[in-house]
Amino acid sequence: MGGSEPTLLNGGLSVVIAGGDIRTVVLSGTEVLRGLSYPVRDADWGTCLVDTVTERTGPNIYERDFADRLGRFSGTFRAELTDDRHLAADVEIRFEANMMINRAGFTLLHPIKGVAGTAMTITHSDGGTKQVKFPRLISPAQPAVDIVGLAHDIGDVRVSIAMEGETFEMEDQRNWSDASYKTYCRPLSRPRPFAVKHGDTLHQRVRVSLSSANDGAITDTAAAQTIKGALPQIMLAHEPSLSTPAALADFAGLPVQFRCSGHTATADLEAIAVHGPATLEIVYEDEDDLERLTTRCSQAGLTPQRIVALQAAYLKSHQPDGPWPDVPPHAGLEVLRTAFPGAAIGGGSLTNFTELNRCRPDPDAVDFVTFGNTAIVHAADDLSVRQTLEALPDIFASARHIASGKPLHLGLLSIGMRSNPYGDAVAANPDRIRMAMAMDDPRQSTEFAAAYAVGVLAAAAEAGVESLALAMPDGPLGANGRPLEALIRHAHALSGSPVTVTHDQDLIVIEGQGGGMAANLSGDALDFKNRSIAAECAIVWGELS
Image (tube, one colour):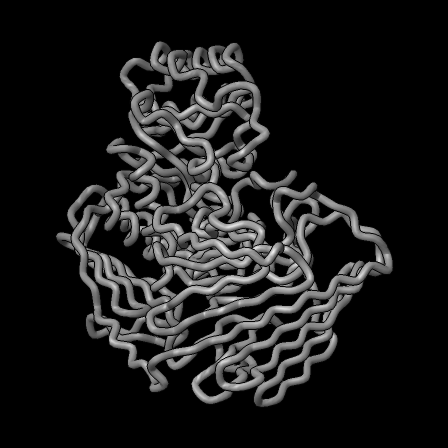
């Protein structure tokens, strides 16, 4: 946080505002709410961009008038600390055009630290209550539905939340690497997208009440943590429509994850055959299409180490309760084993962990499990992206549970979004701003991407992940000529070697025999090994080749 955001204070209760949303709510050092926003999301699940018209801030009150950039709606948000234990928030959204939307209104984010696995009491719309738990392993389905109120504990703080104006439900946002559980409206069981008309008005209220047995400030005693592991095999993801063979050639010796389909040119298959070690990610329409493509790969001279094939319909996300495509997602396993008898055959997702969690392969039928990740499904600000690193250990632990002892060979883990399982396409981003669900993220060409990659590698090494990709050769998700390139080359030289991972607040250090890398994920320069690491930057050291 840059320090210029409005902050509401009342005794030990503080609320930070960022971008017009509540970014965090803290009582005497305990984070009790990670966010409170009020997005409108379109028919492709893209978040409609809004501008602030006016803001009014006092010691205990924040008000904001906002307007959609395309003129389709406007609104007013108000947050007030009514005393040192109560937060009241109201939003009114006025639609000035007909729209098809998937969601509109309050979204609450609950932290995972001190919350995962603990009990919560849900108040339903009929006035009844039910006790459930925040999931410890990541839940593929909603852990709580029909919510108009909820109460739970974080340490010695009791958190009670009441909602008005809509019925809410909760999802486990760690599926998308958000470090939170999310309570949102409207329920996914209702038809979507749904129509709103010119003249429609939405009005919602949220009331947060807190109590604590400890009224004094809680001292942060977080100490540095050191864990031993092994660095995964570092690979490059390559897809002809998103990156070029010419740039791939600049990374000679680096293993590649090559995604192909029936539309892939023979020349592209031949380029991978001569590049070196490869994992094939095959997208196919039906079993005949898969057989034709595996034959073409063999004729081009491809001898992959690993293969995963997925029906094209499963590049889209499906709710756990369906409806689902008619054909099983991994129907072609025998075709792959026949075509490439020496290769390891995998199953899982070619998009995010979400889709693996909702559609799990039979671990007895595959040799490894895979999935990818993007850090900006729901939010694209720097803090939200950094916080996704908090969720990765939970993702990897849940994936290992799904894999039942089979290794994790992962796909591309990036900031930008490679493909959109939730809509027709990734969000267009011609101005290269920080935008959720965009492929072309402005941080890809900066030190931020390298620092983030160190955080990904640290979590993967601790969890025993065996391989992953951090970038493509070039293109919007590329590394060539960017700070990420040096980090990837250095990490490649350490691939498979024992490392020690140290987390010291915002400093992450990975050190192995003969070299290492470190990332500063804070907003200030930090000292390490007699040198200064600039804010949101990474360094490497050692004589590695």
